[in-house]
Length: 428
Image (cartoon, rainbow, N blue to C red; front, side, top):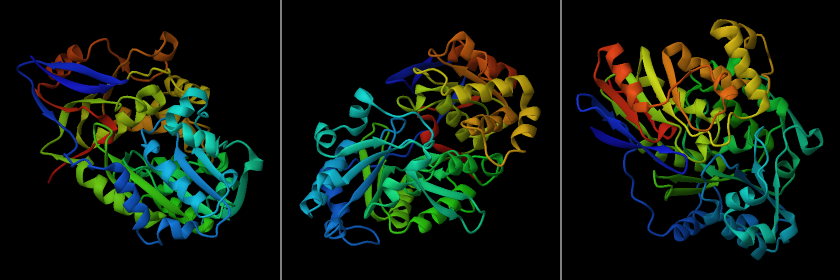
């Protein structure tokens, strides 16, 4: 047998492939690492896309809000937060007028040691205000009306809206609903009110066939996000792209939409990977830590490979789920899925203009469940949690591969070591 290492927790999980099984390994195309990350960030700030140099943007301004992603995204915040803050202060901005705001969406806040890990630089924590967005706190948000196309209610954290310099930072990677993360997505749903987020994630949006990984053209979530940015006004983005080792391979800064699209172009060039055929057996991961901390995030690993899974095939997922299932609301939604079945759950959510909190992730889980059989290897869920996953739990990935190949009669399988960070598709 040969062994393939797939991402799992803070390390890797060796998966042995039987000698008579032909495995197609689906990886990101290699990109050269940046030889000097600090110099690359400095160059991006000094030579922005569609904007003036950052030091000129900061000149004369009195306040700033810098958005960062929460702990579920491995963004290299330690590389760029301090240089940006130092530029703002050098331009005359008081440190207490600079806020680093964690764009939690409706995720839990990041605090204590976790917040320190997220920021990655003690100087930042000591120098400026660092806070978590709270989507449920009405007073924290400004009502900007509705988007012109679909009438989405737009309520955004006032610390961002009222800042003179607004910057969204993040990681550009495939996203199973919004096409690609980063840029406008850090604003909405990142620092949006619960009403906005729940509209964003109702069944009409997430069931749209164009709301899929790697796609921006006609994607309703992407289109609404762009309209929200226009309602806010002048915003800037700092976007990073990292490789499989979590090292920086690209960084852009500038006008939020233009700088984001520059990063998407780079990310797309090596994360979208063509394969010659559909497969009846696909093995994938949930991309390891921090994305595989919960079953909630694991759903992304189930959805992203669907373009290469033969209808009726078997999708085998490895996810540590070190923090368990996810929110209480998500647990309730999945319990409803198990109780009502696919058809009953679908009928229920299609009637709702506002999705229940975290129910959208269960709605997305319907996509792989409709496509074929989903099997999960995990060491982090309790028996109670395992009972409401809605998928088949397995004790051995190797045994699951042998069974799936025997049932399908097809010894060709696909293995995606980095899970949803790769968007596989069948070449024509």
